[in-house]
Image (tube, rainbow, N blue to C red):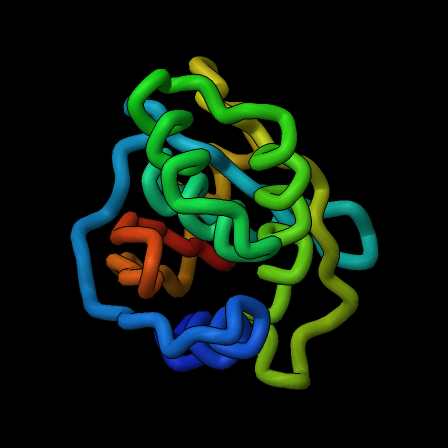
Length: 154
């Protein structure tokens, strides 16, 4: 199964109540300030990863509960994602299992969310290195802003 931008859009449009823009982008560098969501299969093996830059992370988190855009922008500026945004972001990533699902994906769930992890865990590194499909996109969330995300699946 390939990861497709239409699956991201199909998941996020109704979640945010907005028609988000999605276009191809470059892969994100995990040594930058990023948020990483890792996903496991029914046996506990890490099989998927979402990497978001801080803009994408903060804007999607704010859009989830219609927080003002300045809350997201302040976190982006400070380089620290505030607690209310973290909670929303975890929920976005939790729902993000749908990014990988075409209805045939075996039991998959979020394992963890890492904010600027520094050292990327070995199970996540394995997914990044050995992904058989990946997607790199820039998302434009109306009323908030743009950010980039990279998705990987083994």
